[in-house]
Amino acid sequence: MNKLIISSLVLSGLLYANSSSVSYEYGAKDYKNSFSKVDGKVENINISHKISNHMINFGYQGDNVIRKANFPSLDVEKYSAKYIYKLNNKFNLKASYIKIIDNLAPTDQGKVYGFGVDYKFSKGYGAKADFYRSDYEPFNVNQYDLAIYKGFKADALKGKITFGTKIIKIDGDTYNPASPAPQQYNFYDKSYNTTFAKLGLNYNGYVAGVGAFFGKRAFTVLDGGVKVQHHAMEQDKTYMLSFGKKFKEFDIVAKYSFQNGKELPENRDDVDSKVMALSLTYKF
Image 1 (cartoon, rainbow, N blue to C red):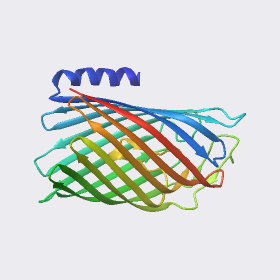
Image 2 (tube, rainbow, N blue to C red):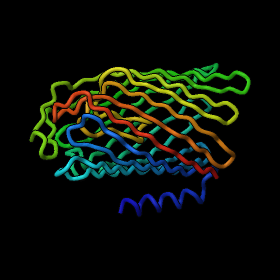
Image 3 (cartoon, rainbow, N blue to C red):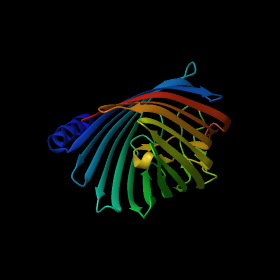
Image 4 (cartoon, one colour):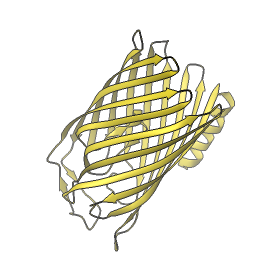
């Protein structure tokens, strides 16, 4: 039913879109020192439409993780929708939504709602403010994002640098993980504050990006409200790299991300996860 609804919305949007794009991303995951996770794959499909002052994005993410012997594999599907309204040349409004389907975690059937604003000052400066409400059972998460950015240009080089913070508040006391982990985990830390920095560059169609998070975080909403980390994992270090080439109708980008943290219910420290991915985008 969810796929049918998304397909209908996408097809109707294509009829009226001024410009559109379709992207497909495939990534391979690798885990180190995890209680049960070994490796896996992730697929992302995103469709964007621009209609006058309106931008609409539909997304699908599918994760499959192989776990150690006698552990069932982890299968996750996430559906997202994002809407941006360009009020004028300086002010944008945003709303987003994510639905989670997970065969093991208690955050199955979770929903994430997002609202935000983006204001551009003079000389390339701008600021963003976003609020996200993650609705799980038997707890919820409120996240507040604040960021400032600066665009710049030097001959053929264009870039954008962003600094920001994420304030995360857990509203609830317990998390009930899948067996054979402990039957109940009590949240000891319910408040997180992490900072981040990102740099994106474009030189004659060649694009590169680097980013990092500093400080502990959990249940984090990412990428402007279209991705969420819904498992009880307390991330401490995160680094991201990307490099690719933009063509007239196609973009191709290679991506790498590294995360280190703690699996909370299993009380497992120093857990690494790495993802290497390739993204293809067709613009029409």
